[in-house]
Image 1 (cartoon, rainbow, N blue to C red):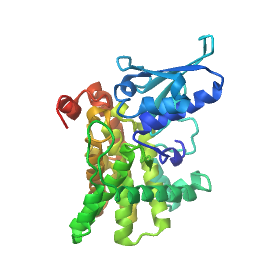
Image 2: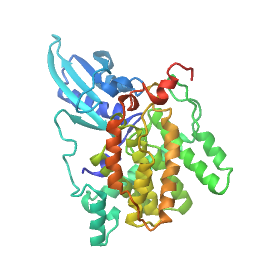
Image 3: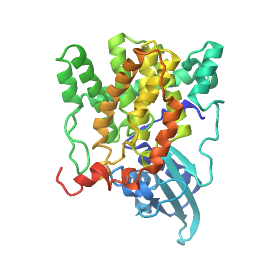
Image 4: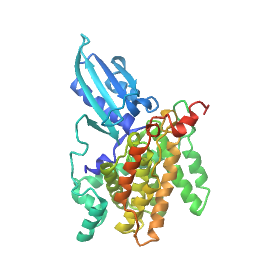
Length: 401
């Protein structure tokens, strides 16, 4: 497995796979073809099906040059390697093809060229949580310490930066009203939730604030604002909301938060390695489901749970997202994506709380539920994997929103 820095990436929304990934690919191609006079970019499969709503063509043209770039959508062509395929072509002044680049955006802002292995820079010797927990027990270590021993020395400095950017996204989001960009005219709700929640007491206040924080980041993401993948842009509201709520409730230190992020990053890494975090590949269970699993593990750690309870919480959070479809209305990361972030944040906390009432024993392990998630994702029809032609998206196609 690669560094957890590949799980927590800083970038602009609304989609890690549809904007961050294509932008990264376009930058690489441009570096090789500075003298090109024209670019043609073909988008395939899911990347083409929801590219307009996800601003894929906009970010590619912005990167390569608006006046010399043509983006062609080919949703009917689904590449075998991954459904988020792209092909960049560069032409000289004689209109001759001088270079081409087939590449795939596999989720979380990661791109992989044709024939390239996804996990080449491995720094972790174990890729199963059971093995990692066994190592921790043998060496009397916590999960965050396992991460610390394998990452670069700057990992907690990086995670503090990640936390700061998450917090900044919350602060921006809870101040803004109006509607989100795009044809849906979806109203921003974070500010309203934040104001109402401060008037509540007890559990309602805590829940309302968690909702508000998740909505704030998700709305910032939908606007193309700066967010942190967790593990994707589409699920970027879950982890910040949970951590901010726990920080306020338990007066957490920055050190406690960064250790929790290390635990969550490890969980996200395992999911990415053994299944997928791409909505186009396995549905929303790979995005919001993964974020919920990561946040549940973090919460359990923060609340003093042992490694078995962390395994249980991460497993439970994913288990109850199995089969979740990726069906964005109009291709926008708004409906049902934003609400899903808010609900998943609460589910993460609930999963941790449930687990802490147990001794950590459970029938299905985290490793087993990740395998099941991958199998479920493979079995999902393409209509339910970020194509915006099935599920909730289908019901809304011909309705005024």
